[in-house]
Image (cartoon, rainbow, N blue to C red; front, side, top):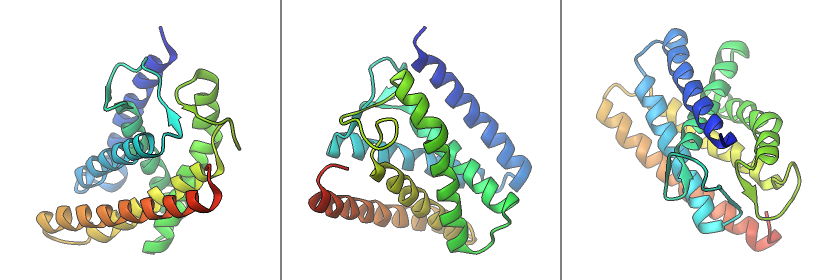
Length: 197
């Protein structure tokens, strides 16, 4: 059995636990508003990163993948964001929009730094094109994590206050599209100045 198969099972299991924990901690009202966009956001970020910038690759050993992106990775993004959100709001008791967005991003980024990147390095879950800063991952990877999650959390906390589900979905989509453009501009500027990530 490939380790990637075990990783997929673990990622989907942790996602299910996260959804259950969200319902227990925050109620069921915003479950879909949080998790569905988080999965899609994670997938789009992964897709744009591997297709446009080609800085890492996934092996073909994952069972479930779409356009070269393992679906477990997209679900993993949602789980990592939720863990950061829970710790930020329930343990650190952060209440303001900016604080929730940045603290959630910082906590989730440290999950990647301390757990995901070392595991991925040893088990070849993803392989960086250049062996760099931390278990192969470049420093910009962690800046990217911070920006990706900050944008998602800012958007989520902004739209969850709206009463209309149509407005929530519309504004969420718009904010994330703008966020994706901002991410691409930052990435292009960074690459034009520093070259490799």
